[in-house]
Length: 303
Image (spheres, rainbow, N blue to C red):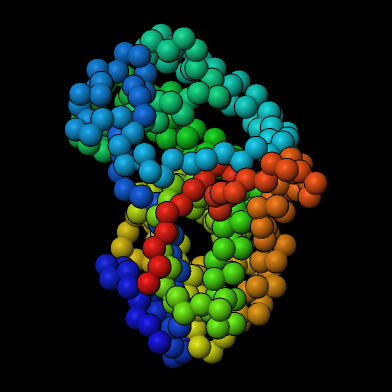
């Protein structure tokens, strides 16, 4: 039996009397500086950030897995969305070009301006144009909403979720399987990672709320001695809220939990490369290292 070790979280009680035998958690790392100026006319250059551009992410920077089949699935869904956004926001984008000094603004680079949010989070005074209203909403709120739409576009279909989150789902399930098979004695495993990693996982589990993943957001898997699994999500609060994967109650039988997620599991890097269309068993260029999902990475600690 183990005790929950995320000591600053409040868990919503589900009334279970079973004993916790394994806990796994993955969270988004904390605040960081922008990677560069959000826009050319921004006055907050690197000297305003004590540790420089992009601090905190140097050891967690994602590595890419080339995946033409993911790229195809994503581009097929992204193209009509991009056309819609560029039409709907064309007037605002043109106005922002003149205001920010950017050469052009469209669906493909509007997210660059979202780094202004980091400046806001650090109480850096902002120009008044961010509060100007376009179609009933402030410019900054439009930037936030477009960030949400474009970021979630990377994960929000079953096919994309499997490509991006399938190996990570497999890692969590495999850890539980190994404990139950007495292949390991590790009963608490914790990962620190990027927002994209958590988004990929939440969409692969089919429990995403379609919102951006905030700093310190955490997904928690718990295995109990009555062969049940419980899933929790902490957003920007200190409360871990229960989640239920489709097809099961929140307190889900272990065997059913595995069965429901079998379709999204990617059990090895070889299988991922095969799904991506970039690797066959005859290839001599098998990577010796990899990440839990495409374009995402984690660091982990075990107890």
